[in-house]
Image 1: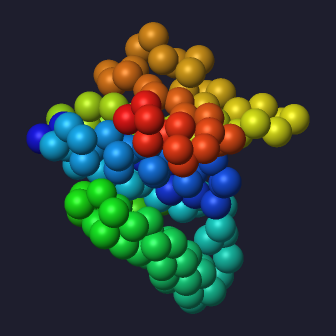
Image 2: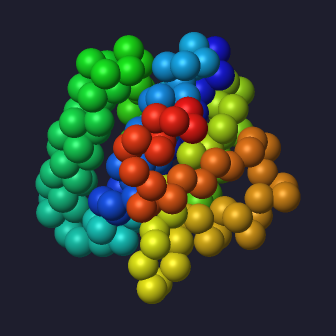
Amino acid sequence: MRKFLVVLDDSRECLNAMRFAAMRASRTGGGVEILAVIPPDEFQHWIGVGDVMRAEARERIEAHFEVFAKWMRDRQGVDPNLVIREGEPVPEILDLIREDPEIGILVLGAGSGKSGPGPLVTQLTKASGTLPVPITIVPGEMSKERLEAIT
């Protein structure tokens, strides 16, 4: 089964990337893999404090994931899978793509603010010629209706 890989973060454009991936997966019989990456610098404290912070970060990610997962299951009939990793986002994305041969497309949401499309879009499009899968970049400002029309 071909899977759409989406990165879960706190950005506004993440929502459109999730919607696009779920709609495409639903219409093509695919799956959705959702990756959340916890930056390593969040836990550079004493061991006990770092462990508590790590557990709290995982709980936040799982709660955030469940919101998207419920919508995907209820509205699109897609049951997504969550992968949580610790490290730098781009290397973790690339590692997961290399490890899972079913991942066929990376879906990223692009910001529309003055700061540009976002660090993941910027970094991964620079390397797009050497990536093992294509990237779909979903505009963060695209309406739900337009997303439905193009998926």
